[in-house]
Length: 271
Image (cartoon, rainbow, N blue to C red; front, side, top):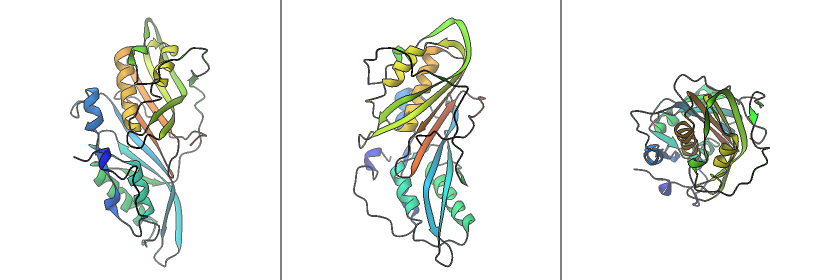
């Protein structure tokens, strides 16, 4: 089984000279889900990992460079996630390779990512627009003391069973660390729910408790989803994180109770 320590993360890697699908490094989602008690045959959520690629280039059939941006969506029920540095190296392998048209590039990426993830991955050129969620309630301005920065402390979460709410709460204070290199990963997070009113101070303290935690982006979002679902008991729940760019890529995992409408695609100013 491939593990993060087997990947190219934290290692010197030669710049790819030609297209090479073998650069993609899949990591079994079960490595993170087993620790959360999530079974592959009984996922408590639906969702996807939406990647934005800002640095994509290739040569046309006559050798003239082409450039583009792209959006990839990897389904959350795929058996594997794709490690981000390997995706960067893979996309760079297109730089000096010739393709017979833009469709050939898109189809090649879709095929290779689908093979790595173990499920169909959608690929489209272009990026979603910058988008502010005006309906979201920013919880970062609360005047509270915070002392816990890791590991994530789900006991900080609470809700009021006597008061129902239908709202979206947002925070720009989510930070975790790469489990291999220790580099910081920064994100905003949006939690939409229906059900008992979530205590906002406890939620903010909980999100900040990821600050020294080492875990991949996708795993952090699944941990947040599982913890909020278990401790706050919402009837419906959606968790979306928008991570800042690294190596020309940003990733936006989304997990929600089945039937929850997917958030409108968008990017933060920090992305």
